[in-house]
Each structure stands twice: as structure tokens, then as C-alpha cells.
Image 1: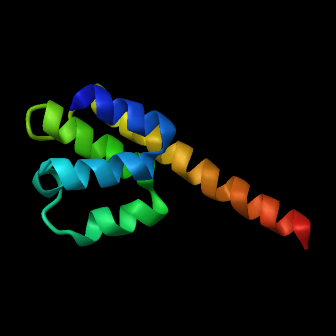
Image 2: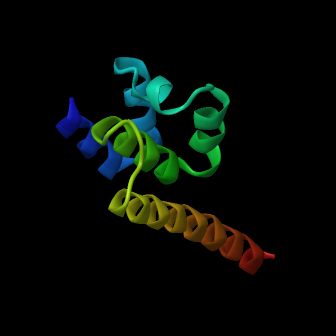
Length: 92
């Protein structure tokens, strides 16, 4: 399942989150509530996916270098949101 999840993540982080939610219980193990992954699906999909993936593969937590990858995913999400906003403002 891991290789397919990586393939779906390369296509779309949101698609990978949906596949992870349907076929595994990794999101429920990584997050205590359903609301955080739900909000993360719309606002920060790469960050949500990276945190859940490292929570499951690690020692039931995100440690050391894994935080660096989660921060990179957060920066990718924020830059995507900022780029979309910049594009929207240039149309006006």
C-alpha cells in the first residue's frame, strides 16, 4: 500500500489523503479528531499528509529530521496558497 500511496501523492496530496482515509486507519492514528485532517485536506494537504505518514512510519510520533520534512511540506502548501492569491490579484 505504501508504494501506491506515494504514487498517488505524486499525482495529488488530496488524492493520497482520500486513499489513505478509505483504505487505512493511519489518519485516525495520527490525529485524535477528524476535524484536523478535514481542515488540512482543504488548507494544508501536503502538511497533513507528511505528518500522518511520519507518525505512522516512525515511533508513533514525528521526531528529529521528520519535522524538517513536515516544515518543507508546510512551506510548499503556503507557497501554493500565496501563488494562487498572487495570480488572482493579477487578474483584477
